[in-house]
Length: 346
Image (cartoon, rainbow, N blue to C red; front, side, top):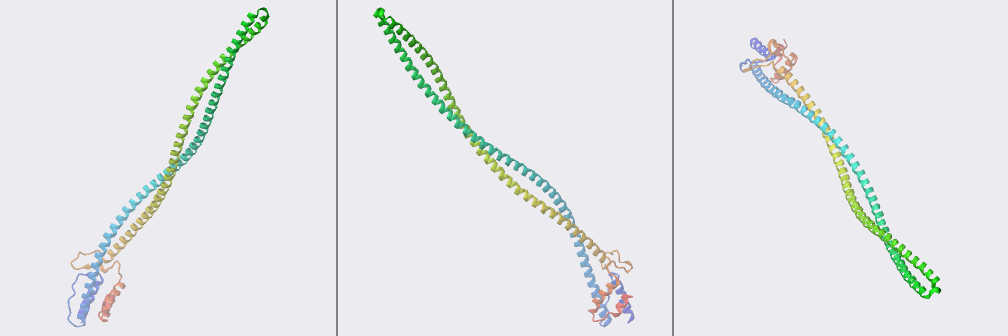
């Protein structure tokens, strides 16, 4: 009776030390046999549990390593992307400032072009007034020329009359001598009047020619001024279009700048999450390593020996936890475990 129990105690000591390699033989159908059967089931269950844990630990180790490597790589890429986005944000901000300045300059140019258009219109109006004045002057000069022609005609007629009067005075003899003197003076005055009228007519003709040339030049200047006004109008419209387009570009660049800023914040958050993922993977790797060390003390049949099983010392399970595990297993056998607990505790 004591020999099977002593052997069972050695089995429990071996199992408590993590050695699951030895085979447990059957002991019949009595209570000792039931105890040995329970030990076989316990050892088999522990073997399967340890194999499952080791397999899970290896998978956790592999997965956590891949997660950690991916997290580190993702963190690096995200950091580089964040740097690129920061540079892009700075460039967009600078470009937005340039576009805003361009829009302001275009608006100022539009206002100045509008002012130049107004001045050109005023100049065109002044030129038109000058043209009208020159035409009036030309008309007045023509009228003066007509009057001078009339004076010249009167002087010629007066000269003829004076000549006739001189002839008649000569015929009258001494009685017409005084009349002849008067007729001579009248003739002289008529000749001088005719000469003066011819000179005045020459001057007026010259002035009329100059006025006509001036009118032609002023008309040409008026036409040129009209073309200038039209050109300035077109330039004003173009500058206004540039100003509007620059304002639209400024608004679009501001929207893009906001989007880049949002992307930068999201990238920074992704970088922080990548770092947290890498830290979590490192923590998971550490826990997997601790779990691997905890199950390394178990020796399984057909498996290579693991370090940490000599001397009956467990890394992660102390003796009280071993007894608690055996309690759970032996209680399933109907309360047959007091002697074995005593052996294990010893």
